[in-house]
Length: 164
Image 1 (cartoon, rainbow, N blue to C red):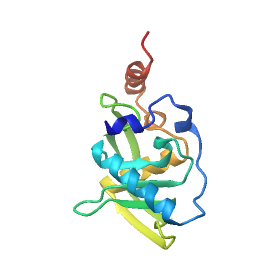
Image 2 (image 1 turned 135 degrees about the vertical axis):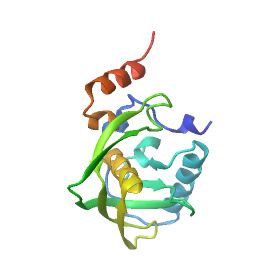
Image 3 (image 1 turned 120 degrees about the vertical axis):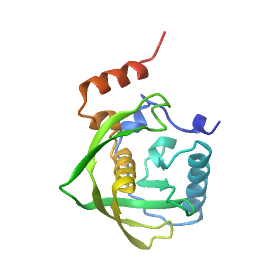
């Protein structure tokens, strides 16, 4: 049921860059609570505002062993030269679509909390990948755009193509 709230490819909102969050208020906190609930119900590890049709620079994610958190106005300020390829999935592309994506193995992300406080994330491996995937959503980029495997992209597009 939670996926009914998540915009699905080829919804055009998934391709539009977002705008910075400027107001840190109860409305933003309520939105984060809603996003966290939908993400959990959909068994997602992350959920970006555009996936709910919102053009806000905001995502939620589920850290290991803790409560879900919001990341507001994130930007990658450093990434490692070392990269790794791993298969990624996305709540907006359905359960059957997974493609290999090459990403830096470590990143530094400057962001804000839901109350507007500055926050720095230094991430490696899995969560570096999660943050990069969600930040891509905020820039209107999907994992199918990032894959360098033409065969995997073709297979994914075949699954995503509307059927009569």
